[in-house]
Structure formats: C-alpha cells, structure tokens
Length: 254
Image (cartoon, rainbow, N blue to C red; front, side):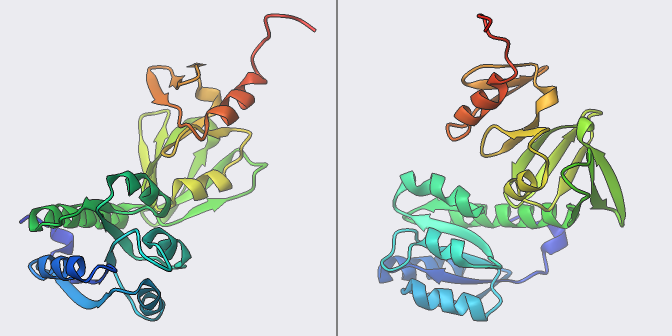
C-alpha cells in the first residue's frame, strides 16, 4: 500500500458515525485494518458525534448521510473547524450533495477494504497538496486591480489581467495565469469569488471562475477562453447570460 512519504509517520485520528449498528460495525472492522490511523470513537447518534467533534481534535469523519435528527451533510455544515469528511452511503444519488461540504470522498455501501484504501490515498494526496499550497490571500480592496498571495515565505502580486481562470480543488484553488504558470492557494473557490471583484470575474460552474476579459465566445452551455472550453453549470447559466448579455450588441436598435 502506497502512502505519500511526507505523511507516512502521521497517524490520522478518526471517528465513525452511522445510525445502522450493523453498518457501523462493518465500517469499524474495515478501518481497523488500515495502518497509520488512530480510532477515537464510534457513534450511532449524530448529535452525540457533533458534540464530540466540538470538544475533540479529529482528522477524519467516516459517516452516513441519511440519519434521523441530523443528516451527515447538516452535521458537516454546522462545524466551524471541520475535519475531512468521507461519506459512506447506500444512495449514489446523494453524492452531489457532498460537494457542499468539500467531502474528500464518497463510498457506496457495502464498504470494503480496497475501497477504503483508495479513500486514504485521496486523503494523503490532499494533505500533500495542501502542505504545498499558499495559506494566505491578501486583498487590497475591490477597487484595486490586483491582490497578493503568500508563497515561499514571500507575498506574490497577482494582477487581475494576468489571471485567466481559477479552478477549485476542494478546499484550495489553482490560479491559472496568462503566462502558463499556476499558483496553488489554500482558499476555497467560494471564498475567493467573494473576495475578488465581480467586475472582473464570473463564476460559471461549481469548479471554475473565469476572468470576463479572457472570454472569447460563449453559448448557453459553454464558455471559451481562446482554446479552453468550460461547461456552464446549471446554477450559473442565467447569471452568466444576464451579465454577458448586457455586453452583447442587439440585432435591433432602440
């Protein structure tokens, strides 16, 4: 089993949560076979798990989604300093909801060791990438045409005109620059969108934020930035059409 060398000595602390006692026992038995992990507790009641998470340091939560009193998604949303989440569910259709809380993985029951090891490879890859990411973005103000990121012990100036698009990678974001370079920042795309000026940038999907000045063509389904083409998410299509429609010359004059 390959884990990333930088974290090979890291023991990740986890808890499990499932209102079905049979499924909970199966989950615990599988996780006990995984090295470099520290079992903390198991819960069948989501409210008890929530209380434990508020009072203890936990790295990963393996939990069901559909539970009485408090769903797994609702629990995750209420935590101010959330750990990593791996959802384990019998319902494939719930997978899209886990994007709302930046889940690291989504496993369909019945759970097996091979699938859990795959989840841990994702976790260690995430931690490796996170350790390399800039941990800070410094905004001057929305009236400025630039911002700073912290990278390699210094602050790097990012000009709006040089940022082509930003790509979400769960809890961090890749900044794709016009010179071909990429910067990795430990800021979620939603947070980045809120901090950047909407005069210059437009969210077109769950994972992509584009520089309006770099758009070369668009339709009801796609946005093109020269040779790059991105699909438009269903939640963002109307806003995009309204925004860019104001810049489109009408066939008929006033």
